[in-house]
Length: 104
Picture 1 (cartoon, rainbow, N blue to C red):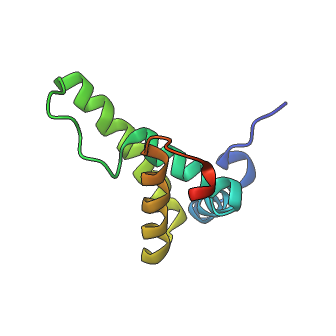
Picture 2 (cartoon, rainbow, N blue to C red):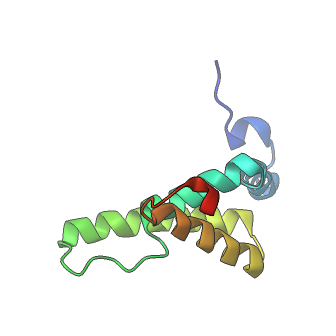
């Protein structure tokens, strides 16, 4: 199997940015992609305040996770109302499980 890269699929450098953005959008702007985005947001803690007792190494690690997620968001360019819905979905992912799933 040969993995695709921008240099293989976009012969001209000027086409690469648009092709990459389309690829991100096709991956993340579907039902499964939205679920993955909410999970990634919850895992990287982008919408949460960091713990106060982090070491510099832990803080750098957390910042790197958040930066990668921010890159995904910048590539898919969702409108503010969809971003708010994504934040809500990510917050739901971080809540403890109480009761049944029918409550959601």
